[in-house]
Image (cartoon, rainbow, N blue to C red; front, side, top):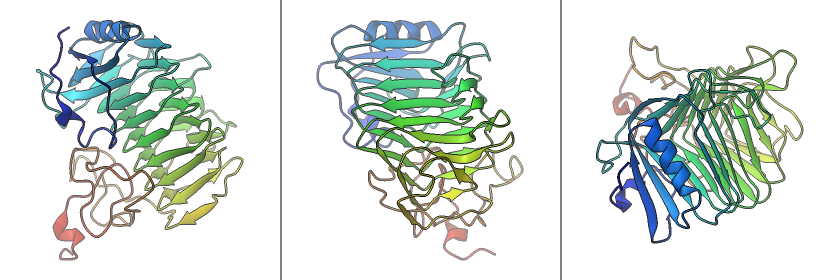
Length: 344
């Protein structure tokens, strides 16, 4: 484990605007599962804000990764770094639980948590905390952005279980696909009070056990959620809903298949669709699953200013807004020729 340089430019486009850590902050550059475990352990009680830079690649876990802290200090986990932790690449730092372990567990009693450019896959969790890919709960702000949750399997919340009591929750620009749980296949987001934001995510092909509430995303808590520019589609293979809205919410320019649960009717609804997203045919004409084909109805169909913003980059580190309006989902179609109307 080595100490990484303090590079302020790293956060541009991959962490929310205004997310800063007080100086001094402990920084770690890690490139193995052991180094990552040691960095999280050291960050729990060192009396500082902590930034863990994770070199891009796949980390095959042989045990659970955990962070438990009661300190009022920030934890930032930023993946996709080059070997020197000096540049964010367009790759991810993927934690693979091998279908044996939860990929990452974070409990922060008093400090904020930010996670970006991470991958959580093949995680497993049978306890009631849920979040086989990622469990994170804090009393401060929680930001999870530009990350992927793939093929995780848990009891409650297959891909992600995240929440904040007193801060602000933001779940922005993520891909959540092919996860499964007894209930809440994609995952569950909880906000105790105030406002929470779920913006620009692609949440598709997640499942739950028959007779349970949802294979998609569940919202809970006493906060008001703003959902904008999300794809929630085909999460009902084993029964349930694409969106299970147990918390009051606004729904702005989303593509939702089936919604249900308490308070399922949004207090504000505008620009929403319920159509096949029109994903490109991979791998024939694309290399990334769940990107939009140039004929998709979701192109230029998003809300450009949904409360806390749309960010500057999409999940592939490409320009977030190309064309007349932002696209719905985690990926922005970059085909400017077709988008400007010059294609067939």
